[in-house]
Image (tube, rainbow, N blue to C red):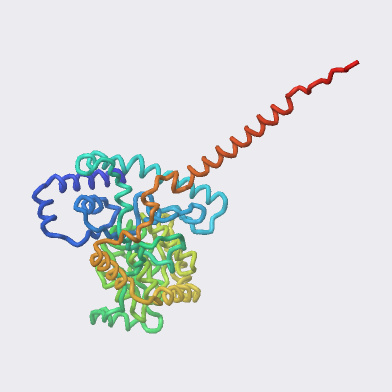
Length: 412
């Protein structure tokens, strides 16, 4: 299992750090103000707790799914699980599926992930130390999401939303790229990038995409690695890298063909560019589903992609004004904030430094056993009282009903 291998690697790394006394001493002497980490990789969490430093997260996902699940109420009745391809309006069967996914994720975390770190905790931490408790102990959770994009759900006072924190006004393009953009005329430009994780698609898919691009009047800037497609049109420019944010913010940009990575999604929202999505892995399927539900994207599956399907998708998003209107509304909502997500993140990091933590924002639920959190002990107590009263009533009735009447003796 890939997840288990990932955590075995994290275990080996943090174990080596904690055993290196010289390195730990240098950390202690440096007098760091806090640890800023992504808790999906627990090394930073363990190191912060070992050094007794305030802890701030830059987070989106954890082992069991969305990071909210670790700290905030996450009712599976309307909060879709990670990689479920569900939204927040669930039918009975979808709620059943979502609940099962929720339970499986909890079991996976408790019985696969947590035991990996048990020996390390026993060696370097006080008795009773628990990884999940440590993860919940962060002072501030900087959550890389925005409810303009994500589905509404319960939250907590120490969760701060910074979705789109990397977005900023577009800068001027290099001269040659700017000339290419301007040459597009009234038709504009299509931008395509599938991120850095997947460097290239199968040749048959790239040929199909190139064929479709050659049939549209727009210019195309395609971030591409690999052999040049044989049928590439004169309207398409291949680049191994380009300034994505500056291109998306350019007034000539009409469409973003994207794999659905979180950064690209927020950049498209910020600049108001509709998406034709080709999700490939991880959270990309959930990301593009959220935009599709809001009418700001169309989703195609790479496994069944043909030149004709891709061309139809391009024409649909380019010619149907609903997509641009929908993403424009999301952009206005996302930008309408009292301070930028980046400034908000900086404020709360400095806040934790100034006050040496933010323990007053941590919910008491972090310290409660699961049965107390769900009030199951109270439910059990009340049921015992009800059943005790019920059986006591039955016993009294039985005694009264079974008591023999006293016969009167006749006196002559």
